[in-house]
Image 1 (tube, helix red, strand yellow):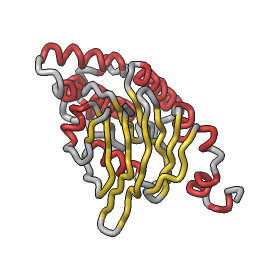
Image 2 (cartoon, one colour):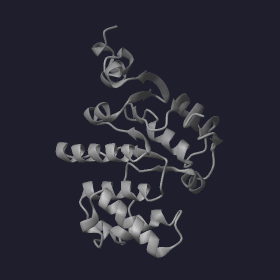
Image 3 (tube, helix red, strand yellow):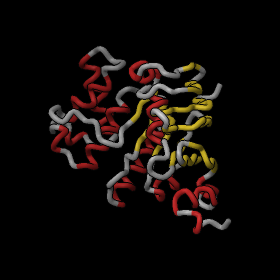
Length: 241
């Protein structure tokens, strides 16, 4: 049984085809990088997988179960969690309370929910901020909190949407270390990222989208020298042919 199967998924917005018959498989325990120019369809594909957008055609199968066009809360209960490009924290709640929101998806006991939330805060290195309001965190800390909220739902698949956007190089290294810890804990990861150094370093395989279509798939070292990818990012004149 394949862990995740994306089969010919298409998403249209009126006359615009944002995702165009994209297909790929994901193995359990893998870190898959999803890259492409702005407007390539990466986040739209995430939205289709997580139930925020209904697909026009195609199928999404997670651990043998068809989850196509199921509502987000159902898909999250199945074990699929995601972060967002724009941080979606509860600003007027404490850091601990933000994490608890996620734990209550599968934990009804408040005392146990607090214990699980504290464990996650230690894991993401925000335990010292547990009583702070989310609005008072720095931008990198807010991104880390968003990741922790997703982890609190106990995902089997975690989808990260530009978690490293706007971070300094040392902060990026910290997030890379955290993503590796997440993978080592048994969670499979798909990561959208424009910081190519980061995505090339951490991914076992990379898929490239351009104008909604999958144009390349392979190991990071192969993708870096693929003329189709170079044309998509830099223009035809930079390619070898």
